[in-house]
Image 1 (cartoon, rainbow, N blue to C red):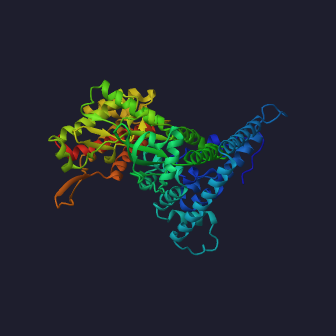
Image 2: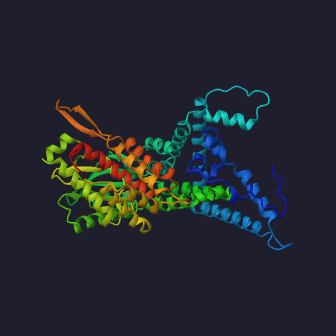
Length: 543
């Protein structure tokens, strides 16, 4: 234990002198249920050697000691102690506000679910951990534990956390999807592992779905729809989708929010918000990670996505963009029926088509697959520049080639927006890529990123060029399969994990140079990499 005298600089103990923190989420315990914070930190300490570098208790005691040692006026009250107490009161008040907002019953229920998930995950982890013998006499406990943790397989911690998230349900599945789509924020092993995050949610009975639709629309189901298929087309943690036909004759799909979803997300995200602030309070050096700010932004975004009227507006805005750009003859999107939509119900036209990667099926609806791809690529690229947002999930399942040859963009639940602060840098980066001016690309990345040190732009430019050259050797897979009629069909298989790896490599090149890229850049570059893979398969001669 370090003794600190009054008036001493406290250099080794004060937060201002702590080492530069690692990347966000290198400590998986920092992102788990706030009500179980201490238990999860202990679990995370077992699963990941990275958490062993974070000792909130010691740092908090050092911080308190520094506060006691610094007085504004000789003999007067310690100003830093007052600040420390006030920060603690603020965190406590916010925790009470969260409990009042979500209710005691929901708080208790979610805590119980969290405990059950944690116990199951811990038992499963115990079976995976390798056995160990007692340390030799004289071995320091810290050294023994550290050597044991370092010997564990590197994939164990991310895999354990993913399984825990899946058991915790809707909020944590969406959080896992956030991690998977943020290669510029999270460590590579976690981004890759959370690509596998399974959204396995039980199907809600059609009677419950009917009740939600009728309650939210304020009218009987039969007053709006001529028919509704009781068997869902899809079921995820937040919503369930059913095929239907309007009384006016249009084929539609109905996206219905599952019961209790808002309460669960409010409780979980509220506790995550408080937990992140508690962690920053007891370990102030982690404040530079902006953990609390990221969780707060995530909470606002995820709760906003629960209002399906926002997704309906995204569809309206994208359609308006297509009209203004004169692209409606080559690209389309579902049309929402606002009169039959609400906060928990979204009714939109059903599009019939084949995936953009199904080469044989595409040839059945157009004699120019290459032009079809170019239409999709140009539309998406133009939306980055001319639309309020861009589609941020253009995997093959969300791009259909319709019977009339148009490309249909589906699922506007995940969209990206370029902040004004980095807009000029994004344009400059695009120009640099087109001209293969790697120094211009490097300068743009430096301007759009966060950095606290001098960046060697020339070295970064060379690293980016090497990376760009390596991308040219990566090709999608062409798979032949036999249909029910015995006809052989060809389809493109784009490895989502490979696309994520490429995005991670870009983020890592920037980070080695001392540049931390914003999440929006990660979303943008990942979609561009998807199109790069589609281009190599459908239009290999395209520049």
